[in-house]
Image (cartoon, rainbow, N blue to C red):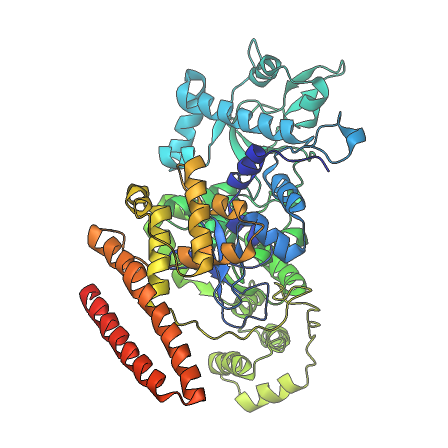
Length: 616
């Protein structure tokens, strides 16, 4: 296997967020400064698995597994270090040296030019929208629709101008010197009969489509103005390409998943503008399918990221029908997913509601009008019915009971039966008897939970919290300050007689000294990578980085810890030695030796108390 250069390993590690990689296996949710989830390495009923996004490492408070992004993949998926690096590189779309010597002429990442050209195209379209005269009409259109410049920049909205004497993207592509076949495979051009390339998007407001990692992979262009009798579609999307398959893509997922870690839920919407307007209003969990039917592949992605989904579609009949189809697919594909529905007022979508009533009013409506799927289904079934007509009422009640019968909880069934009895003045007992006659269609149990909590080699772990004494606490604090506070390194290095009593801490201290010489800017994940051959040191480092310490450090704090190590620790060792000698003297009944050792032990205890008193 070809060796991966160290500089490239660093580039790969820094190109990803460890939470995104781990988030493919387990759900993570914000808790304090870190993200928490169920540990994938042992049976974990209470979330004990912590991911530190700032420092880019993970740590389990129960089984004490730890490491950076490479270490996670090595432990979770039983990979070698080079295999883990290559997997992260693939995730980040970074080329690495190929393993097959016979394939050295093949690019390791054939799709990289496509990603790069899409990124450049998004930047070009955005520039044309906000900085040129050609984009002023499109910019006015967006501002008139309630978009702010902040939102336009956030979503990198752009403009593909009308073709006049030249085609903007064709000429831009020529300047980049890309090969003809590469340009064809981007999906951003159309071909004429002679095989010549032409801009696919013309006179359209451009919405970049990004993958889960935030890379631009496609575009959707909205027609700015009618084209006479050309019958041009209002929205034109990129065709499927090697980097874009609409069945696997959800608009704004790269941003929404970050918000989902805070709120615990995602919000499914119909259109791009719905998501953008909701984002501007403060609801940042919005995602949207690609203008097509909701797919099982998209559901699997959602289920991996959250356990709660809110559906917020348009309030018209088409929107209600779409909600019902989505609920049916969700129930069959992801029965464990908790679902809620927000029914918008008739004739309004979320974008229109924000424009008409403001962002704050939309957020209030969203929070106050969430109903469960059964409540939605019952409301849906009565649309267009005259419930004063006995025949239509009986049909509705029969259909309603079929829906209620799907509920597994008797209490939930009772709530809806009581509502029907109260609304239509019916006998509750009769409804209950009728319900008993309906045999519900039970969804088969899942063969595996939505997130694996055990690994092939994992076993249940029972741990006892470790008690940290004064000496070990001093070792931990001094190491933390040495690594995270460069201004104190010189002071600590000047203590030539400083030796950590614990071999593990001393070894880590020596490794840290070597690391900071070569890396003036300390990065936890990077330091962990340098310690990969010593798992015990990686675990010790993780425990140190989890410390809850004061932000401000002063001379007194440093010197207190130094005193513990330089004075208390030697005394501790002497006391242990005298205690052992006393034990041996007692076994031989040497009374003189026992008396001398006892007095020596008393003197050492008095010295220890004096030292501790000075440190308090």
